[in-house]
Amino acid sequence: MLIAIPSEAPGGLDAAVAAHFGHCQAFTLVEINKDQIGDVTVLANGGHEHGGCMAPVHLLKEQNVEALLAGGMGARPLSGFAQVGIHVHSTAGAETVRDAVQLFVDGKAPAFDQNQTCGGGGGGCGGHGHDHGHEHGHEQGHDHGHHHHAPVEREPIEGKIDVREGRIIAFHYKLTEKGGAELDSSEGAEPLRYLHGHGNIVPGLEKAMVGLEVGDNKIVEVVASEAYGERDDSQVMEVPLAELPPNPVVGAVLHARQPDGKVVGLTVVEVGDTTARLDLNHPLAGKDLVFDVTIAKIEKATEEEIVHGHPH
Image (cartoon, rainbow, N blue to C red; front, side, top):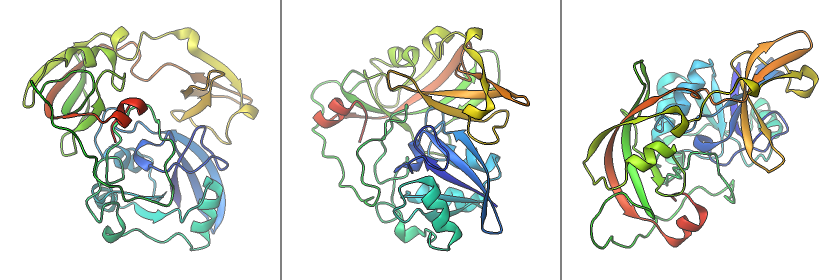
């Protein structure tokens, strides 16, 4: 059977287990055959960048994953996994993917039920009782074994309640390629949340949302340079297989940490006998996009959220 474990970059058996499955940097996919560890691949997690709480559910279902090992989860995604036939088990405090897999093989990774979800069954988007809403995998400083969080106390907004810097914005959206098909949508899921003015969403969309109020709807066309950048063919590189995780497959996304500490994703576009070609471009690079957005809620950010640069 194929199991998935939310992982910190770069993924793989020796990677740390990510505390928050919805915003992990990658999923490590492990094939289990007769209680033995088989093929291991790494799959990038799009998180909530273009989808609601159900985005990771659909992502893993498309890979034919049969079980997920996670440290904590909200009621909505747990229900979603149940609907698509993916069983969810606890990582039981395991620190590495390898340890989590071994616990599962040994029958020591208990199954989740609704009473164990974060917030007692009311967990929000992102797998915990609060939605972190940040779009670049910044999950830091959280206790793997603690999943209940007090609600964030917010001061009321004085004056006009509109989109501006220092406010937490929740919005529904539909994303399409300009002149093309729909790429993603928050339909049927929680709205996407972000801290305005901190680069949590693509620049062109963030600029266009300034001044909108709750209930406002806007169609926003974002050119590639203001979305995920222009495509750069020089960013496709050939790498020896010996430097990659075992058994890379075309379409898989690997993660690497650059000298400046930034984690980047590389899509496998070709696998040869001794090398593989990896594409550093974002999958939506070079594409002009159209966002259909509706503002659902506007709140004042706390000082801690502003310091951290994302919603709590």
